[in-house]
Amino acid sequence: MRYQQLFLFTIAICLLLAQPNYAQRGDWFNEPDEHSFRGSGSAGNPYLIESVADLVHLAERANRWGGEDFAGQHFLLTRDLNLGQHFWIPIGSEREKPFRGSFNGNGRVIREIYIGDEYGGNIFEACGLFGYLGEGASIVNLTIMGGRIIGGERDSNSRAGALAGLIACNVDNGREDSIIIRNCRNLGVEVVGANVPNMSVAGGLIGEAYSYCRGGGAAIILLENCSNNSRVAGGTARRSFAGGIMGKGRGHGQGYGRLAALGLCLINAGRNAGTVQGGTANGRDAISAVGGILGQGQGAADGINAAEGIASIRYCINTAKISGGDAATAYAQSYAGGLLGYGDGYSGGRADRSEARKATSLGSFLIAVSANRGQVESGKKIASTAQSFVGGLLGFAASSVYESGEIGAGNIQFESKFSLENCYSYASVSALRGMAGGLAGCLVTRGNGSNRNASVMLRNSYAAGTLNKSDSIVQVASGGIVGCIRKARAAAWSPQVDNCLVALSYMNGAPNRTFRIVGQITGLSEPFAEALSNNYARVGGGKWGNALTQLNGKDWDMSLQSPPFPQWDFRNRTWLAEADHSSLPILNRLPNQAYIPIPVSNQ
Image 1 (cartoon, rainbow, N blue to C red):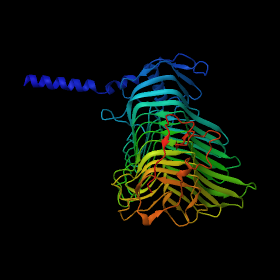
Image 2 (cartoon, rainbow, N blue to C red):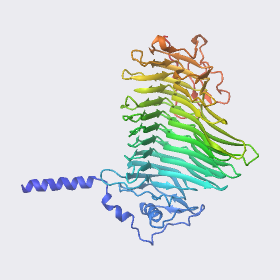
Image 3 (cartoon, rainbow, N blue to C red):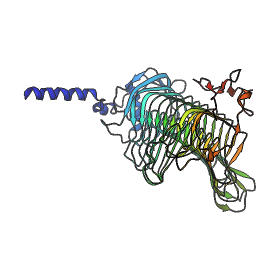
Image 4 (cartoon, one colour):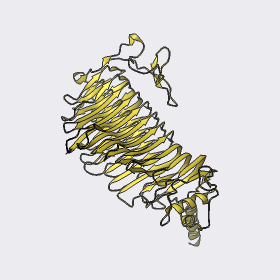
């Protein structure tokens, strides 16, 4: 008996030593007040972060009661740091006191960051190395390596990212400000969304980004040359978002007074090589959106005068598997895309006719010069009354205009746009139930009022790989480019697909099922919702169901040898092609691409 007790005691001590050292976390955040940084905090003489103690001191000063936001102050990391699996408290952990300084990682690495797991709870609504970032903040030249971050479950909303949980740039009255994230990497920090009632957001680098400008000026958020190489998993919530670089992003301009308002949320040169698993859409009408770069994004403009809101993905590439979230409850929606899960250009508000001059309210989302080379699939559990939307590049794209009335007698034009151009997908794309496309799951235009202009455009792009190469699909509308096209009756324009190419080696429309709509370019198209021009298709093989096959793309005559790219930009080297055109082209400014073979048709 005595030996058994000694053995059990020894095992308990070993388990305790093997766990991350959260027991000491209190010592970290009770640094003496006399601790100070070397340097003055200026751009020329920044505060030096030379040790873990210095980084902890920065967090403690930011998070204490009445803490500092460090606006206009500069920090420089001088050496690699290892946090030693201690439970980290984010820098700027309270929404009222975001970090607003400049942090230069100097090409250094911060290792082993842990926030929340079975050994220690997470109480933070926004978590990462930084919790909240505010106007004027910049984080550059930093790598975070190793660890795990789980979103906090204290509140109904949760945001988690390896670098920061929530970045928000809010300006008004003619001011201009920005938040810049540049040359940052996540190498091995797993990010897991929380299980919360309302909204759960998880991103490889950033959880959520929101730029908002009201009444004139400009609010800008820019992520540039950043990458993720670690697993990201969405949480369970009524709204669940997950992305390889960012979980949720929005650029919002709201027009008031005489000044134009501009809100920008831009992702440039992003690279994702970490698997992204969508979270569960929990509840009636719940949604889950997952993308290789961005889970959910919107460019929005509203108010009573000129405004512009823009969100964009440019020069980005995903090379990892993207798995949609489950939608097991009634009327839930699951969106999955190689680059973007759900995207929306939105414009709305009231026309202020007290102004004689013309004004435009424009909300837009742009994807350009980007590619996906990773598998994309829907969730495994899709209820019979739920739907999934899956695409090689994007799951669902919408352009929406909604007017809410007029003031006086002026003339404001409401416009919204969603545009994808000069992109390609080389992937295995599959959906269990819903809509699937080689590039997009579904395109929609919608609106009301008499002065509206909503447009969705896909152009100069191609889909390669396979579509629905699975015997497990139940009800899927399949299109070589787009699974489904919809146009609301009040919308002025139909979604358009121009100068696109289908080069799939296999395509399946489930011809032995009761629901088998399949087309070379589009699958299911509602009446008056289709606008196609100069598209070509070539499919290597598959199950078509001849009676319902819609041949709405021009046959690609291989006797011409070279693929038909009449409108594509080879002159300025947006696209690169082999001299003999024996393979499909690739994009000039993206890394790690091999040429793609042209499929041999048996149709």
